[in-house]
Image (cartoon, rainbow, N blue to C red; front, side, top):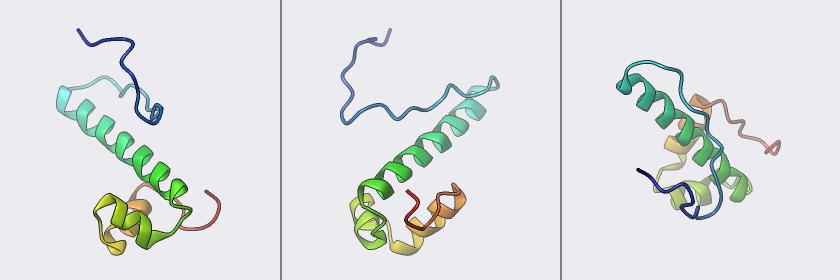
Length: 79
């Protein structure tokens, strides 16, 4: 069993348990939600500086912008 008190580096991501379904569907849903949380946090911490955030995530600016759009994370100062 997994430890309930495992330390969290940098805090929790705050993702929800996926809807019931096959393991594959649940993993896909959870992965998408975790990716959204990670992108949002990186974008906020990088203060919206796309080149800097992209470099920190190992992405091109174009790839980062596309992922932000896919997750409906606005590319403005509202974060």
